[in-house]
Length: 215
Ligand code: SF4
Image (tube, rainbow, N blue to C red; front, side):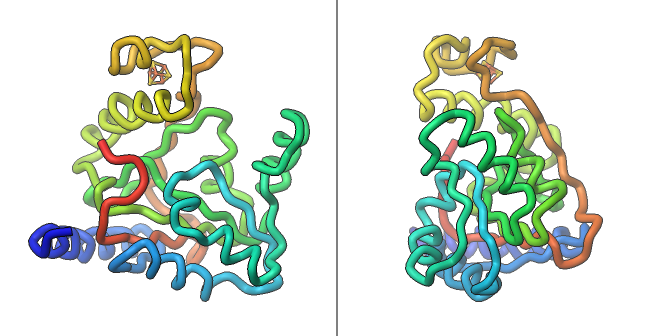
């Protein structure tokens, strides 16, 4: 990444960090996804039960492999052999000690915006796991709340529809959101998290590079 881009992300991250802390989130600025992974590993007690939601960024960080290497207890829905088992694992994840996730969009004043299909990811973010660790590339800071919601709905969600190989939704035919209610629709719950009720529960890693889905 060019130096000016890194400087831009760093300046913006310093501002967003203050806003996040004001909203009772923890915020840690990391130069790279690798640095975020190492920082997160240090925050996870080796006896903790860890779960994670669907996230390109979490997978790309390599943290799941690192946790397996140190024999962490992990609830991994990707290992389920049936839909029923997958749902049971997602339900158990809500009672994990630590939940790993990313965020679909972050406003420049520290509000988290997520669109979820089943709802397990936003459920875990909202309540359940003792700690939530969220990896967010600075490319996901989209501006004010209206802009961030519009970006998540009209750009992030359609791209995710292509990533997940949906076949029937308007977005995969036109490239833009058709506000659908199809069986396949991945946009069931739009969650706006404007503060953390509990102190020291949600930690946001602000990563100074482009990670996860780029729009
Ligand atoms: S068309 Fe449906 S699935 Fe696609 S982005 Fe819009 S609401 Fe989501």
